[in-house]
Structure formats: structure tokens, C-alpha cells
Image 1 (tube, one colour):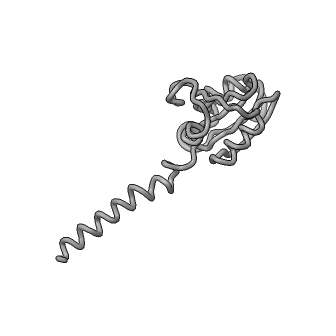
Image 2 (image 1 turned 90 degrees about the vertical axis):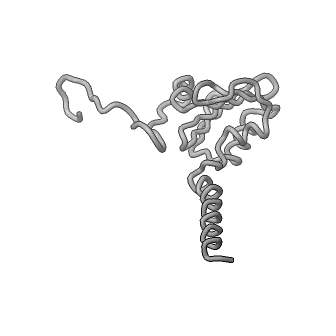
Image 3 (image 1 turned 135 degrees about the vertical axis):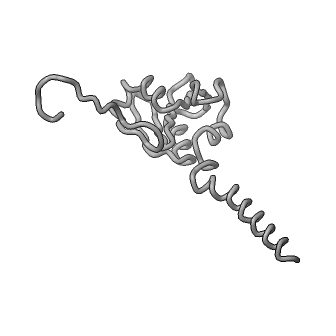
Length: 148
């Protein structure tokens, strides 16, 4: 094999490794919630959690369903309140599991939308993970007082 062919082979192998390994290293093909839930539960509605709520149905109760999702995905935090379970993900997602007849309903939302819809249940779940944006405005209001 000529040195040029060996060089092209090495470049090809490096490209292949980069295409396969790099996304796993940065979570591109990781165990995010959408794909994992899609593979295990009945899809009801929605397709793109960036733009709309995506909903599935589980035959199991809230606790069992939430525990399965949490153990199968990379949830960074979990809360339960009023018979609902909430899973937060570092890539800016929130999964809500709530009672639905004899099973449960699973929803996946972009964090801001999901948190806004459920803030009365989860209370303050401050800060943002990962890319984009901070955890709030730097504007502290007017008037007198210390601590601003």
C-alpha cells in the first residue's frame, strides 16, 4: 500500500471515529429523554419539544413510570408533588409524569415552557444548565435598599 493510500486510510478512520465518538462524548446520541421514552411508551401527540409539548401514555402509575424514565435517562434532578413527578435534564428539558386514568401521561417540554406550566407544583427550580442564557435578569429594580 502506498504512503498516500495509508494516509487516506488514516484520515478516513479518524473521520469515522470523530463522527461516531464525538457525539457520544458530548451527549449527541446520549440517553436523552425523547428517544428513550419514544422506544417504551405510546406516543400521543407532538413531535418537537423545542416548539410544542410532546405527550406519551404509560400503563404504569406515576411513580413507576417516573422511576423507569429517571433510571433510563440522564435526569439531573427529580421532584414529586401532588401526585406528579418532574424530571429535569441538563440539556434544558423537563419531563412531567402525571396520573391519567389507569396509567399516566408523560409530557416532554423545553424547560422554560414546562416549568412555567408546572411552577406551582415544583416551586423554585432555579438556574439554567448548559448553553444559552442565564438564570434571570441582572436588573435588580429601583429604589433604596441594600443587597442590590
